[in-house]
Image 1 (tube, rainbow, N blue to C red):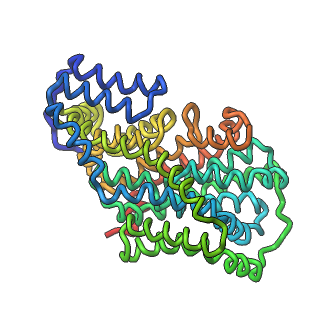
Image 2: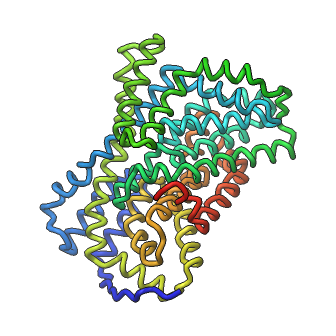
Length: 435
């Protein structure tokens, strides 16, 4: 396949190289992502003059002045409220009544519970901690080794950024100018495939190692009882996803309604009171205070890189090596997976999205397809060393060493990788429900 030749040259002076290297070095030293980016972007603008340094403040404001970004703290707050009201336990009960009859009953139920939580919080770390606290001891009692149980929860919680509403899809939509609502629709099949792959992997391992035998059959009456008992909890994902997919709400509006509904249920059921609100707001603010500055700084960085022709230079050099569509897709996929191993999803999206998105467009890759492949591949990194966030979270919950959990998570990494490859080479899996 032949592509249009792009003439682009970059004068790789120290004024360009040092700020970019500096961002990576500062992050490697443990400096917060947004601080590292702020220093690097300021130095890049100062040394290259691509944008007046005096306009940095205005550009930062424009980066945060987006209605879609309001959904991020609201979804985080909804997930926190779900846990504090006790409604998350109801979701797990529904999951257990649904999948508890399988041979790997509670293990499968745990993964399904992670999926339910993902439909509300949009955050994998929150789901990992919440579901882990509720299920680890029961998984061990069911016969699973503690490190394997931790790996199972960490893997299931990866769906937090893969199943709508996902903070990662909100961020990538904003950074690349792609509709968040459309991404949420497109992500249904990929997110579900990842969830199923984790459940099937657990079932296979369970059968080989005989960890668990549920010893109970599915009961429609028990299932209906669990549905009724969890009716308030199930209302929240119905409002979020139903409102978005039907076109009644934008993602931000759906998040707002979900917060109000969750808090209303909590007050009505007397599981929370007014004194709990400051704790929830502070918890949401802490997470949001990391995400929003990073997203804001992505705008001047993307503009500076574009003005310096760096994305075009990457396109030119990749196409000079090969013009094979399948090979280019494989290169991008491997790049995403490796990057996901050493850095979290949001910083990766902010740094790599604007750089590799033009390459995807150049080879004819659909915008939505690119976003789905990127987020899915980055999601694998949450259970891979050295910076697998879910590994650290579940290690803190269980006391198991990170490497022991990572070792047991390897089969789940493999199954997720298989799905990511399928998504990369079968666009219809991502584009089936969009126009």
